[in-house]
Amino acid sequence: MRRRDFITLLGGTAVFWPLAARAQQAVMPLVGFLSGRSHDESAQLVTVFQRGLGELGYTERQNVMVEYRWADGLYDRLPMLAAELASRSVAVIVTTGGTASALAAKAASATIPIVFNVTEDPVRAGLVESLSRPGRNATGVTNLSAAIDPKRFSLLRDAVPNVRVFAMLVNPDDPAAEAITTAVENTAHAGGYKLIILKATKEDDIDAAFAILGHQKPIALMVIAEPFFITRREKLVTLAAQHSIPTIYGIREFAASGGLMSYGIDVSEQYRQMGIFAGKILKGAKPADLPVLEPTKFEFVINLKTAKALGLTFPPGLLAIADEVIE
Image: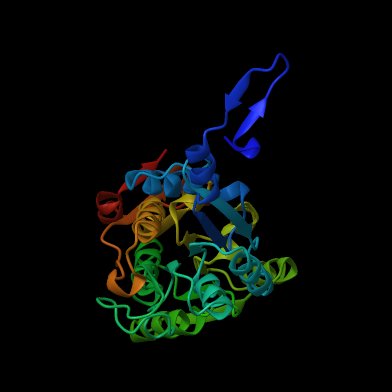
C-alpha cells in the first residue's frame, strides 16, 4: 500500500480514504447560471430551476455544482459575467432574464452548451437554426414577447374602455424591444389608439417617464417584461399607484406586489424546463438535438384591491377570463 492511499492517525491506526468518493468529487459537473435579473427577487425561481435539475437526478452540492452570476438588470454587466463562467470550464451555461443573457453567453463561447430563456424568436436572434432542430450549441425556452404583448395591450384596453391614449415603457437595451414595440404599435394604431413610447435604461429614466405620464391623463400604461424593470418592480408599482395610472405588467409578480394586472407566461414552468434541459445535457444530450420549447400556459392576474384604489371597475368579461383575482 502506497503512503498516499491512507492516512495514519495517532495510535498507528490506518484509515483508508475513499478513493472512489474523491474521484466522484473531482468530476462533479459545474453548471453556470447567468441571469439578467437579481438574486433576491429570483430566489423562488432558482428553487424551481433546481427542482428541474432534480427531475434528472441532479442535486446541487451533492452531485452537481452551480455558479450563479447576476446582472441586476444592467445589460452592460452581462459580457463580463458570461466570460467569467466560460473561463470556469462549466459543462453548460443556463441563461435567463432576457435575450441579452443568451447572446452574451453565445459571444463568450461557441462550444459550451447553452440553455436559454429568451423573450424573442431565437431564430431571429441568431441563437438557433430552427425551433425544432436548433443545430448549434444552444437550446431552451422562448416566450415570444412580440406575440404576447399585443394581447397584453388588448387586455389593458378592455380594462379602461374610455381611455384613448396609452403608453408603453421599454428598455431600448433589450434586444427584443424593437420587435415588441412594432407589434404593439401595429395593434394600437389598428384600433385607432394613440401609443406613446417611453424609454428607460436607468433609475432616473423611470422617474422621468412617470412625470410625463402625469401630464397625459387619462392614460394607461404597459410595462414590458424585461430584467431592468423586473428587478425594479416595487418602484414601478409604487409610481403607478402614486400617479393613479392603470398599468399592466408582463409577469405575475407585479400584480402580486400591488400592480393592477399582469399577463404573461408561466415563468416558474420555464425555469423548471431550463433545469430539465441542463440535466439532459449533463447526461450527454446535445443542444442541437433538443427542440426549443414555446409557452403553452399563460397567466392573466387581476388585483382588485389596486383597482378599487384607482376607482376602476373591471368589466365582467375580463374578470371571467382571469386566471387569478387578488382581493
